[in-house]
Every structure is written in C-alpha cells, then in structure tokens.
Length: 477
Image 1 (cartoon, rainbow, N blue to C red):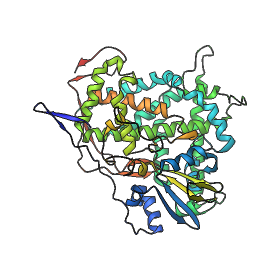
Image 2 (image 1 turned 135 degrees about the vertical axis):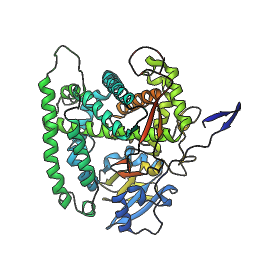
Image 3 (image 1 turned 135 degrees about the horizontal axis):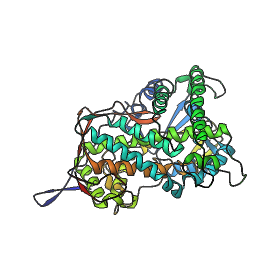
Image 4 (image 1 turned 180 degrees about the vertical axis):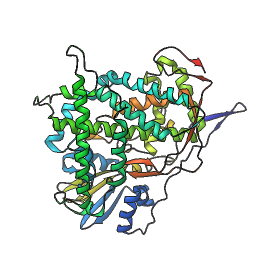
C-alpha cells in the first residue's frame, strides 16, 4: 500500500474508497430488475452478486446465470467459446453502430476479420501510430495550459482528445470538421437507442422490435457519414513508395493470411466505425475516471507526477518507465471497467462443473461484479494501484477482464493502453488536477461505465514538470 511521510515516520495511508451506486434490495422482482437495468445496470445487482460464485435465475422460460467463478468464465470465453454467442439484445444494441464489425461478428466472418485485422494492431504497428497520439496529447496540454486555474470539464476534454487521436491514427487527418457531427451521433445513440427495452430482450432477433425501426433509420445516416470519411481519406491518396501511415492504410491493404481476401467496402466501413467508436469512447472514459480518482487521492496523483518527472521528457514516451502510471490505469479499469458486462447465449447444451447449461440459456459475466467480488479481491471497493505492481501477485487472468479474455479479447487493447498511459502521464506530469465539485460522481452502466454527470476540475501548472514535448529535459514552470 502507498505511504505518506509524517514527521519522518512512514505511516500507512488509508486507501480511497470512491462512491458507488447502492446495491439492489434482495427482494427486487424480475421486472424491477429490468427497470433498474435500463436506468443503471449497477443498481440491478444485489449483495449476493458480489459474494457468490454463480447465481442462477430465470427469464421467460430460459435460465440465466451470473458467473463470478474464474474457472467457469474460462470455460465460456476460452475452452468452449464457439458454443456461446452474443445475446439478441446485445446484437440489437450494437449492430446499428458497428454493423458486422469484428466486435459483434460470429463464426467464419469473425475469424476472417480477426485474422485480417491482427497485423494492424501488433505492438510494432501501434508504435508506428504513436507520433499521432503524442501530437494530439501535446496539443491538448497546450490548450489546457491556456485555461490553467479556470474550471475545466475534463470529461469533454478527454472525449475530444481521444476522438482526435482516433481520427488521426485512422485517417491521418484531424477531426476539426467532422468531430462535432461524430459526437452528435454518439450522444444521440446513447441517449435514445442504446438502452435495451423489454421487447429487445424477449423477441427473436429475426423479429424487429419497435426500437429496431428507429435504429435502422439511425444506421442509414451513420453509414453515410462513415462512407464520407473513407471517401475523404481515399481522395487524399497514398504515396506508393511510403510505408503505411495510418490504420486505414493498414486495414485497406490487409489480406486474410489464409484466403488472401481483402475487406469489401461495406466490411471496411464497419471496421472503421468499430475502431473509431470503440476506441475513442472507452479510452476517454478510462482517462476521465483516472483523473477523477487522482483528484480524490492527491498523494497517489503526486506519485504519478514523480514517476513522470523521474522519467524525463524523452523517457515519458517509454511505457516501461511508467509502471505506476499504468498501475493507476489498471486499478481504474478494475473499479470502472469500460465494458461492464459480457453477455453470452448458449448455442447448444453444455456442462460446467456440476452445472447443466441448455440451449438458449444466458450467461452473464460482469467485470463490474467480478472486479469488486469479495472472494477475489482484498478490499475490493478501494482504489489501490499498487495491487498491480510487484511484489503483489498478478490477478487471476479470469478475474480481471477490462478487455475481455480468450480468442475474442479486444484486438485494440495494446493500442488503448499505450494511448491512455501516455495521456495520463503527460497530463499529470504537467498539471495538478483538483476536483471543484464535491458532490460524488456516480457511475452509470449504459453500454460503457459512464459518469452520471461531468464535474468541473481545476488544473494548475506544476512548479517542476516534464515539458510535454518530444524532446528536452525537465523544466521549471
């Protein structure tokens, strides 16, 4: 655990326990749980879900299970993953914005997409894209410098920054002209169409629900917008003698190593939409929660600043020198997992230990529950980044799922972690971040783990900081 110095005596510091929503009462009915799930998924789970390995329930003739057992999760997501598919409600919610992209594709289509995309997300490919990330982060810090000591909405700043990074790494051009439209699409869908309704859950996928008609209308506008971005990128051309300069180059040139197939224009559009949406929104959310936690825990914030200072201006780009910063992000994603729920439906019967699974049964694996489970974590509701650093043992691979696990683990995990670690290090290295609004900010589970509102922060330039540029050494502010 972290410590503070008091009169030369090293005294253990009580860890921060951030606010979290109240847990559901034990007698909540099925319809009450559904209503709570639509409002905020975290209010639909009671204390049992944080204590027991497996909870069995029912929903309109089908059995449902919450799995908090790492062995059971391994079976579903790794050992027999081909027997478990996304639920109809999950597909209804995601398909209008992601189409048939790799995040929701199944079977042979998914395998083709995964094989084809894999070279674009290797550590080497991500390193090639790092200058795009760093340039945007530096520009964001320069803008924050201008608003130093003023009230700042850091959630909006993180959303704009990660969207700009998504645009530049995907297309090599900024999102100044298109960013507002993209943010409007995301806000519209999240507010009106992303929450599953009762009929979304009970109707077969082949029967459109009332919400599906509105989602289909949204998808027509959304796909036209993505096609316009791709056309603009293609019009910019590419130097045939130059290496790939962005993700679009890599994805457009990608071929399935087994079949030699390229993506069709429709498939490419769905993959672009998936990478822009999934990439910028989840990373912005993780960065917001990291900044929120560090503002509540100034001593830990200072530890991050000290690590950045010790790394120096050039070293801040070396992720191996930012181990504590990475641990802060790991712990943030434990408490506020960007993807808080993994839902699967059984395609056929199965047996997991003594448990019989029938075709159509629904399996829920919720990182929100798993990461706060009282059997799996010591002091599970506290913010303790050092639990992710030696000499602490690493967590069980199937008890910590910020990016999923197994064959369908998030393909962009390395990209997202590199971006978030660089951004957090540079921002905290440059500024002291203070929360101005003392009202607790509660997390809300709607597609991602979002804050219920955007609090205001104050940023103050550090007296001695690492200059957020590509060269030089530590400078005094």
